[in-house]
Length: 175
Image (tube, rainbow, N blue to C red; front, side, top):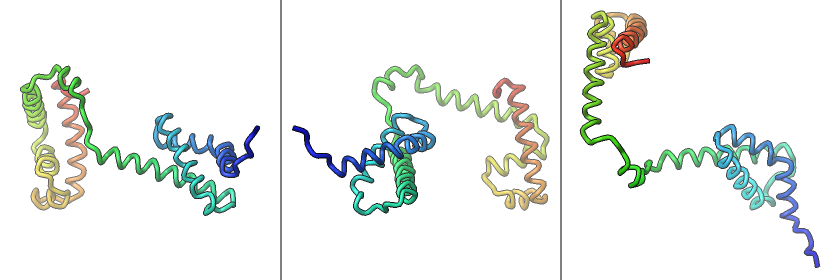
């Protein structure tokens, strides 16, 4: 014996046939991951199935609702991933080849390299970078502190960063 067709199942199948491909493409564009895109499509269809009685029969409105649900699901996944701390397995920690002191040593070498590169800059460029990057001052605050116009601070910062990059390249610290 064959069971009679379920209207909800037929509705879901028709939705999948009409919107499954476009939804998958949209979710893939948003996530960049085919597996996650498939999950998004499935969850979107489940939500449509649960709300079948409330959804508008207009195909354009239904399509818009489903794409909105898919986008919201991607956003929810992104927010959930950002809220969770990244975990490292014990095996990965044990396999790490970095000795405890190496990180501090690397940071010290980086500081010395940046200090050497800063010494190669003109005093005007160096002072603007120190005010804006190291002291964390805004353009207006740096301008007032250095006694120069805000536009000058902006242009000097731009050219100072270019000169700093060149100096770091000369020192072999940047590519």
